[in-house]
Length: 288
Ligand code: PRT
Ligand code: ZN
Image 1 (cartoon, rainbow, N blue to C red):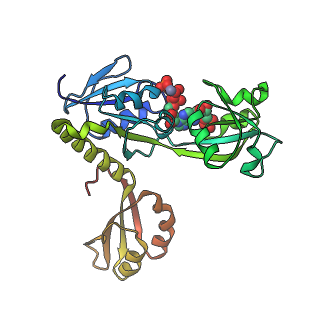
Image 2 (cartoon, rainbow, N blue to C red):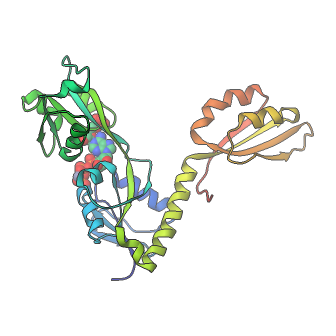
Image 3 (cartoon, protein in one colour):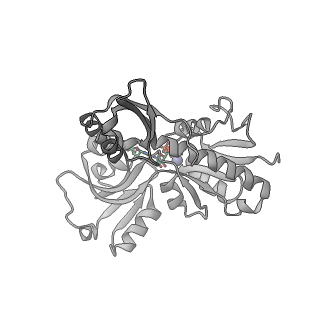
């Protein structure tokens, strides 16, 4: 027991690289993780445990780890008492019910009487009960997408991100059950340990600053002086933009933090309002 906060992340899978990248962006320095059970950060009181994603909710609930990064789908399926501290914006996917091509379902009630293969029986049953549907759930441990062609089930309920797997298996989306992304979860009683709680607070501040920075970009441009009112209208800034004088008295430099996803919507308007030398820069950290 070294008093460090213990964070569980997926050992090898779809969430591993993004989880490690997030921690590195938080300024944590730790060595190559690939073959280790856990590593200790060199510059922060944190041990990082590498586990199968399915084990993370229970390990966090039982206090083997204090916090964990895992898909919302996994915590929902495991039904653990592990509050979500932050949504992390990666590992996005949806749990969908899908049908074989040519066997379209028009309404949810068309599912009545069908068999559905899934690796998510708890979430699926919950969905069926909430929608008052009577269907048979067949639990498989993997390769759910081949169940209809094997004659094992009429429908499947599986995680989809690009949709390629559905397409390759001649399946189509019928209904969405659940949207998921990676989240940071904690044990319920972590707040009872003062020292660990302080470490967690500090980690959360760093994570939130990285997430804020990711959602934002730093916009810089030069504008004719008289265009300032129009440009200020166009910019969806957090606060009012920074306006700086230039050597050319008729021009100004304007800097602003904008939501990253708005840039392409406003760039043509900025140009027509007279903006030139438009630069969009990434922000590494943003403390609000
Ligand atoms: O070994 P371990 O148990 O740790 O890993 P795992 O194989 O159980 O999980 P892994 O690495 O596949 O996924 C980890 C988490 O990533 C999941 O719990 C989800 O939260 C999230 N995630 C995001 C996905 C996907 N996208 C995804 N596409 N998990 C699984 N898939 C699978 C899906 O099951 C299907 O087989 O990918 C296929 C569909 O993908 P598309 O792109 O063809 O639609
Ligand atoms: Zn797994």
